[in-house]
Length: 131
Image (cartoon, rainbow, N blue to C red):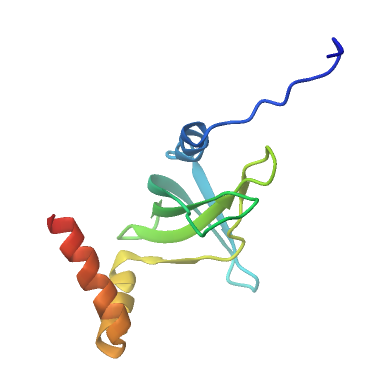
């Protein structure tokens, strides 16, 4: 091996999760496509789930974020994802759904009332949490 040849260092999954988690406490920015303006908040907490969507060349991590906005009375929830093509970790969610927690509750309740498959999912989640 030539002395000037570089060895590529790859991060393991735990390192990537730690890098994703390191954003907690930092500012997040929302830019709206119309005249609604922009909104900045603080990432208060984050759940990170390594995505297991079968064999793929690019690994993904899903995140559920808890965000606090200065002029809001309640915290907000955002669901997004990161992807890592090669050695570069990228926020992949250019568009996300970010709503106050009360709106998420309304979404989940209404979807569960309307769609049995969604209600079944929530019941499975609750069953697993009790185990």
